[in-house]
Length: 114
Length: 109
Image (cartoon, rainbow over all chains, first blue to last red; front, side, top):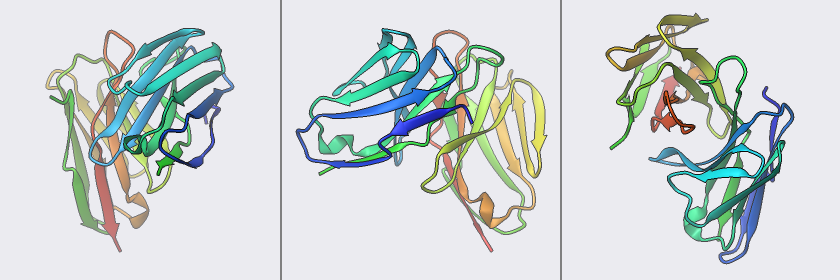
């Protein structure tokens, strides 16, 4: 257990509404990631962060923004949700002590955009 | 082009069978990560390995860095092994990980 929580765990929202997902970690890890998981595609990187206020885009960043104002929180925002953003969203951290090759995942957020 | 390829994509086995899942990658890595995801569940770490073989219970993972190939074996498979198995490759440079699309395993009693 790497002390990662995600909220909400489930959300149904309407097309065009803004949505913010929260990832919270308790162990002060520097690297945090947001992925989406869809059938046939596996895990795809949306955005990641390598420190407070330091973020970068992943392969599927269009329509998403992120913010990291504190080490422990990494927020993912869908500015105007679309049905194509219906997915399961996972947050992950990468420890920088010990093995730097592993990632630990949060429990996921199932988002449905109707 | 996928940097990490897994095979097979789907696998159905009878309880007790020996199972092999393969992962090949094209990126330069120093280690490879095997993950497990039960239906509707979270993603948990099984193995991180950079050479040779690791064993945990009935699960065995092997890697050949030179050949860019890793395998996950399950001996005496059980229905509770039914899950999606994902291999992940952290690159030697940069911060982004590469993931296989997963192998969906169903073990029938």
